[in-house]
Amino acid sequence: MARKHLSTGSPFEEALSYSRAVVQGDWCFMAGVTGYDYDRMVMPEDIAAQVTQSFETVTKVLGEAGFKPQDIVRVTHYIADRSLVDAASPAIGNALKDIRPAATMVLAELMEPNMLYEVEVTAYKGG
Image: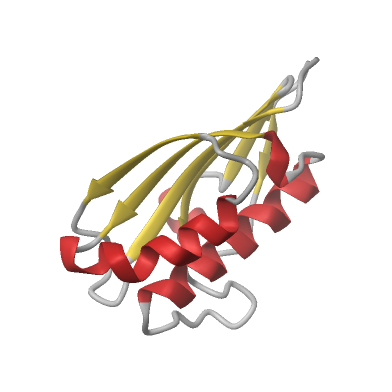
């Protein structure tokens, strides 16, 4: 089966030569999803809004790839500072409610000072 590359239209994807998601067979690998609203290219100020926007992007890209949020099997959360974990947790829990993928949370300095959250997602829709 041919590999499929998906884009959100972000200028960063073009500048850095990457795909927002790559589909290979029954697998979808998505990376670099942040709180940017790619339609308006704005970043919410608080981490809960960034998490919510990130998962709206995840859901949109999964749909374009022929997947559903329930197909998510693995998530890696990147958070800019330990002090933000409590504020991010309810939004993360809401986004992944009833999915319960394997997950890891990493503290990381992200690309922009106002970028507080980034997520990487793997989805599988095979039988």
